[in-house]
Amino acid sequence: MTSALSELLCCAGIAVVLDRKYRRNAMKSREWTKKCLSKRQHFSHVNLLKELRFHPKDWHNFLRMSESTYLTLLSMVSPLIQKKDTAMRQAITPHERLTATLRFLATGRSYEDLKFSTIMSPQALGKIVPETCRAIYKVLKEYYKVMLKT
Image 1 (cartoon, rainbow, N blue to C red):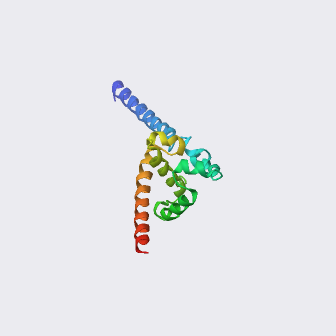
Image 2: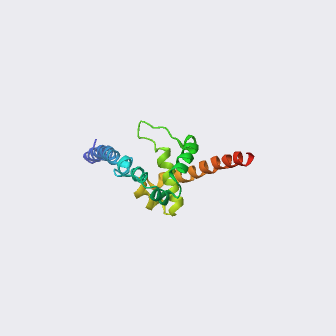
Image 3: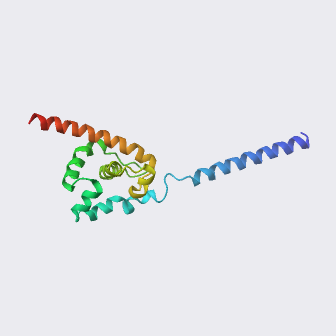
């Protein structure tokens, strides 16, 4: 084997080792979700709603409906929007899904803007809002069919 060939093989070997090490480090540094979004239990709008229960006018202003109406709607749509927890993360609750959707409908804010008050990613909101709107439509359609028959 010539010295030029052995040097070339040595360089190729070093390149392979460095490439594998780089890929391993790159995979370790990836985040599944941003750290601030993982603190949804502490910083989301759900905690605000706990406080607004004592101020019905503010509750109504925030969600554009009374607490009793909200709770009725939540009980109706919960089975349709409930997701299961996984080993990777906790599912977004029906309560959080419904309030995020109602805030979107009440304010018309973008998903990018809503992510700060809901502590949910815009991508998640892009799936949650349409899904929850379909569930609301479905349950209200059935509700009004029953109401019209009585």
